Image 1 (cartoon, rainbow, N blue to C red):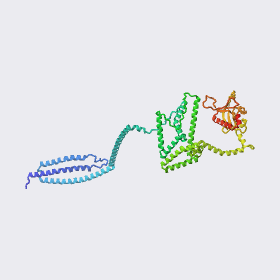
Image 2: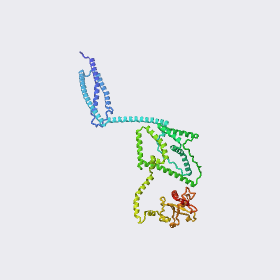
Image 3: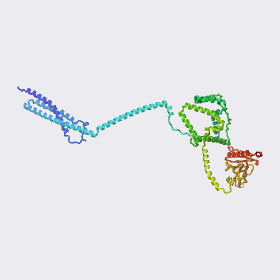
Image 4: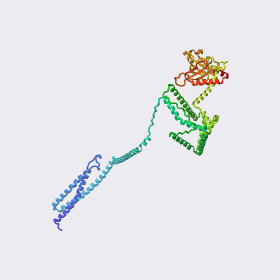
Length: 589
């Protein structure tokens, strides 16, 4: 077989083509070798100098790409040289060169394989180092915390948006409610109570008189109602009281007491409506007594104004006294001040409590209604008609009258203390009484005035002593209008009342001779009355006028603070003497 140049050229071309095909692995292997050399021979560096491989740009890859683009061009040049010289230096040499080239390529491939293994080991090592660095720097935990914070922020923003939406809806709802029901809501708004001080009117006689008249007019319906009830209880009109008793007992028997009272209230309001419309209707068991209305005075004198103030003060004093007595009695009843009375109330309350728990309410109401009717119409009528029967058997009346007030309790306490002290005092006084002197003489001497013994000053018998009411006397001034001298016209002193005499002790310096003292026998008094010394002064006066046969004008004891007490004492003692005296003595008087 002959080898022609054409065949050699074709074989050479094929080999060149095969070699050209194998150039690409060689160029790739060279590129990998260069990259491995750069990785292996970087030199010792610290870990801090290495950038994060995930974030660093792949600079070596770009360099290798440039090498890959350059190597195929050199291989092409070699093939061109072989084509230009197809014969070359000879065919054996060419085969040997091809074999050497193949050997070198296999060696290089094995070397590249070793380098690739080393590169894989270094890659694994670098990945481990990167993982350690990430663990040490807590990048993942920080990222997780950052993610959690972002989620929390998102949740908070979502909640804030929902809250804002709710506030918007609530504000709209409140606005709508306020527009619809704002007027009613304002009425229920709590506000601090304002302490308003009412302006007090100054004291005026005209205003006081007007208020008194208004009080009388306002209390008239209540007074008339109470008067009619009292008339029903007292059987003022027998037919009316009998009809009322029958109607009430029938209503109590059938359990219609409360409806009956409600019907009576409606009936009374209807009658008042007709009266207000101009109808003349008068329905009363007791005829109403119309008090005369005094025409109002425009101008009152000083005396009338003062008298008006005194009248109002007296009424207020009496009213407050009665109210105080009632309240004090109720307080003492519940505070066991008088155990006998409180014990009765205690037992009654227990009986009422047990009855209300055991008995049905209908039966309890029936018993109370029947008892109230019998008590009001029958028992009260008997007790009012027979006072002695009431004092013996009316238990509420007896308990109420036996309850003491605070002043009465104080008097009882003082009386108890005086009883305890009195025996000791009497024993000590007996020790000081001289021998031969009786107890009566000693008690007679005990009543003395500032000037001396009482009976010696007024030249009376020893049995004449001041009464217990006026043991210390009443300060006053004696006005003797029969005298014209100023020194004899008015004298200041003290007035005493004995069993038979009215004694005045003058307090002037020359009264020690008892010439200016005055002694009036009660049997000689022809007239006694209250007296007002100066008519221009307000009030009823502060004097007592006493007329005797020995004086032309009555003697006046004026400027007495306790004038009413002195007048009652003198008048009572005077009437006592007149009634107990013999007829001949009374005829001479």
